[in-house]
Image (spheres, rainbow, N blue to C red):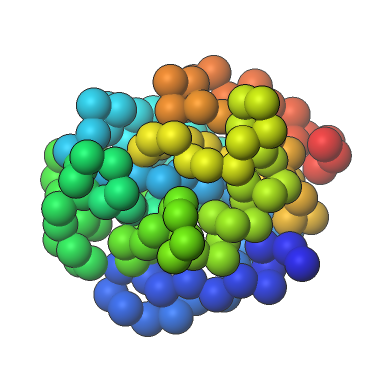
Amino acid sequence: MSIYDIEVADARGGRRRLADYKGQVVLIVNTATKCGFAPQFKGLQKLYENYKDQGFTVLGFPSNQFAGQEPLEGEAIAQACELNHGVNFPLFAKIDVKGENAHPLFKHLTKEAPGLFGTRKIKWNFTKFLVDRNGRVVKRYAPTETPDKIEGRIRELLQTGNR
């Protein structure tokens, strides 16, 4: 199984296949508009703008599983991200990223790139997963790791296409 086998709902409720991103370097992030890490939206947007023409994208997956920090729904999330942070990278429907009802995407990501001490749990908003052009999960980044600290690895994957 790879991320390309997974289907997700977009912010408007339509269905999208992650196979649409085949051949791209992808940064998948669980987001929340009311989180203390929300200023990272600007850094994520900057990465997206700087590298989208080279085959890179950011995919945001809102979740309300951490202290109720994503109270908005659907299109309202996308509007708040655009208005408050200038975000225009793809945002999807709100999902569970941990627990029994975790979306298959996050079950796959946490299996492929466990956290500290091998844990599969997502501990907070803005956990990031970097995926190479072949759909392999290359690295998991903690919420405290800012987008600018990931940029070098993204550039490397874009240039070489390898892990």
